[in-house]
Length: 291
Ligand code: PAF
Image (cartoon, rainbow, N blue to C red):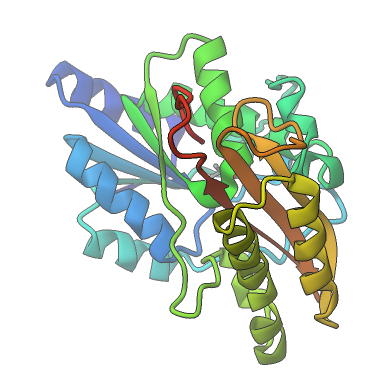
């Protein structure tokens, strides 16, 4: 695996790959890799001739009150993991080169970015779309891989790719969970043992939603109320949001008469965790695309 830290170096490598008519697969990450990231890497390796993984903790997507400084980092461990997966190129740019003095430009996906997580993290998705578009411009991937855990991010990035006519495909892969069901996240590392146990309330509340849905409940409000009641019985948990939304615009639905995203964000102690499931209405005409 070759590690590249300069934008020009990365661009030169991509130019060479393209000259050899090789397809480029890309997995953008903020590092501190876990099995969720590695599942994306494995799929990327299966699908593309060359696999590029980026590790860049993007300051633009953290508000001043958030955990940019404390965000877990372990480049040596990440490098070993990526080498073990047979990754071809690791792109690890410096913040100073990504956002030099006088940097001004941003890209936004209006509307979608202000819902769900966007409400309590204003500016977050603008930071994500800006850095991802920059990375796409540098790496020029034919396909890029993201996790369903960040369902809103994936939907926004798909929209950006469509709206800006980028010649590439976004692939979204399933959430990878620990054995007890907790969705893997680099932020799980913040949880102490008691909080780690309490965090399972997210998984349990989604299981409750699924159970009600499978039993025939179609009123979104009833499911959301049951989920909130369950979470509020966990003393270490504080709800940010619990919503059932459509898969195109992320608007709350009243009746579940089409496929929906059940999404939630919950603070466990000081750590904000997110999770989601898609509930599919079988037998109905399927929408073209899923998050
Ligand atoms: O999902 C992430 O890790 C980040 O939001 C991303 C896509 C790498 C952009 O910084």
